[in-house]
Length: 150
Image (tube, rainbow, N blue to C red):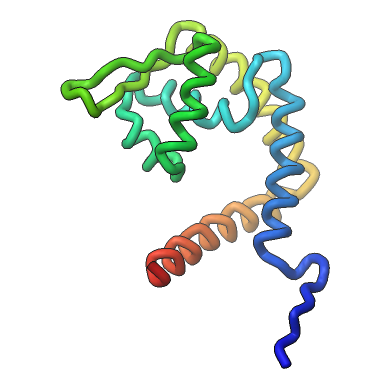
């Protein structure tokens, strides 16, 4: 008979989702004064660093599906942080950060740096670096498994 029980703390997906919720809450609280959520900051910061980018290229860069990214972009556009324009053909959409987006990223980076510093301090620099390496390796492994299973 197959053991169908899962011990607390042994499910990779469950533990990563719990960690993601906790770290997201930490960053969201730090960013409250900017009007951005941490997920929005990641998207806006990627646009900020490039000048302008096609939505499909941005989705690839962020490792997001295009539908989820488009929903996030519509919120950023409504808030005035980005502009979305038509590309060379009707199917292509180009995203550019507005002046408001640029100034908000500049302010948020200062808050981001403070959260990063605190997390590294509490974890210890070596543990933090190891975590970053392990997460990168996990992404590679899961991408390989997804590709292999499809």
